[in-house]
Length: 289
Ligand code: GUN
Image (cartoon, rainbow, N blue to C red; front, side, top):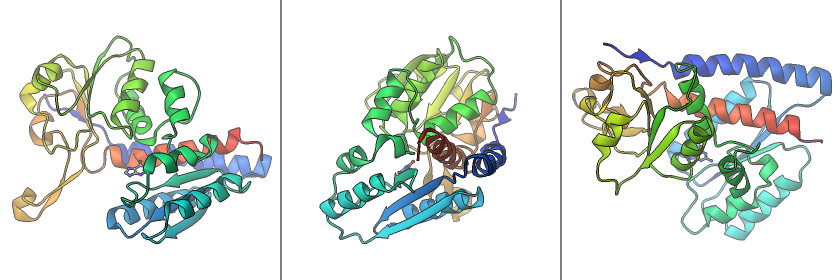
């Protein structure tokens, strides 16, 4: 059997068409335009490229954007002050601080300083706590995007065995909470897990977010399994020495066996940005300014 390819690019495009309409209506009916501030510290080329994509998408959807590019040498106190200014600015609805930050800055402290109502990344402990308590709050963008991809191929998640590989605060932990809230039976595997192949063999849904290229093999997965690949590693040896982006799932072999799978690139990546845009719009709607 050949798996259905879950086209993240196309699904993200549909989300954006819907959002563009919603943003236009919000403007006409309530004179409100979502305003997203992206904070980039330093010169990390990957981070700069992600921020450019986020700002461009927000702009294309009709949002206002502020591009705050700060020097790598900025002190932690100066960055905290900047965040506090953005918190107080009534014109700003969403604040995103691109990670990672330079080593001398405490990322947790910065994230905790963002007003949770403007935390469109969904990473503030208050938003993560609400997610784990299954209460309304802002949800982490990548897991939110993954849930939309899973929903596109499975109509009912209730009782499904879901396996999340990776336990990061950015993806693994919030992903597990979202699947649990959708009534899945959830397991989390990580670098110390001993029987990963056996856990995969029992899973109806696998979310691979370990940052380990081609970790998940075809003989580890069931024919009915749905696989979501969050991994993104630059592989110098791929495509006859030309290099290429690879995920945590061995796409060539697993796509011959499983029911559905996301490609890399073109799967989860576009949905992370779509999740951010959804969060920015919804945060704006909830705010009373
Ligand atoms: N760095 C890598 N992924 C992300 C993300 O989703 N949000 C932020 N803020 N930084 C990141």
